[in-house]
Image (tube, rainbow, N blue to C red; front, side):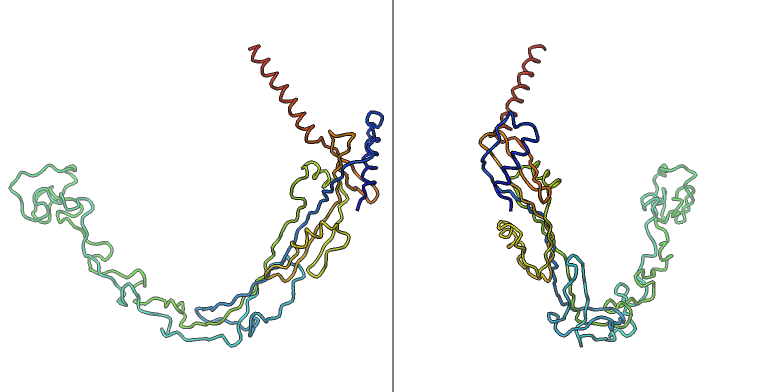
Length: 354
């Protein structure tokens, strides 16, 4: 831990090196506030154990899977790396049952055609060209000529043919020839068509066994290990961004790594120990933990002689301290006010000249 004497001496030395000593009186005392930095990550390995009933359609070899009696008692060594992922599938001893399916061969009657292999179908369909409206201009598709004069064909005369029903020349639709309907393309006029669901076989695969005629059931246990990472950053606020970034780049950070078996080192300041205690508390399902962090003593110094400045002091080596200067909040507002006044005056001047 740096002493206040070390901090003030570093400020005086820094002012002397900058050549400010003749112009500014060197401080003999100051208000020192500690803003020591702590950064890092806590990686926890969280383990969950779950059981579920499994069904496999067909045959399956489960002999290579580990077996257990009680899942919570299954022994598994803690991970060497808490960030490693793991999913382990196990089989409860004595739970495997191989059953022949009641369907026999994996086939059942098709649910759509009820085992017939075909479906009813209309032998004819309405003519798509005339839709039964103008099948024949003389008989309207009835076969009996009307006494009225023939209607003028909506198509050209060469597109009309002799009606198969009434015999009128160039009066009937060329597609259905006056009938008003055509033979169904699906069944070719037979009145039945093949069932598309079973390809006319009348059977389909049994869903329970997937068409294999066999099924296997068992109780499966899953042990899953997932990493969970928490970030550590202290202080979370209250320190200027530029001061923190300067310390990150040049500071002599002390690094340490802890596992779930280690205690917080004595070298850490008391405030860091109080900060880490709740963050290192064991979470539900936690079986391993690794903490990588670094910390840096940093002091904020305000001296009576230089109220317009704030000095930030931190070590850059075991024997040397770095001083980083920022304007005080009051001086920052004064600078901002002056800049605003200049901009306002410039704006008014431009308005007068325009």
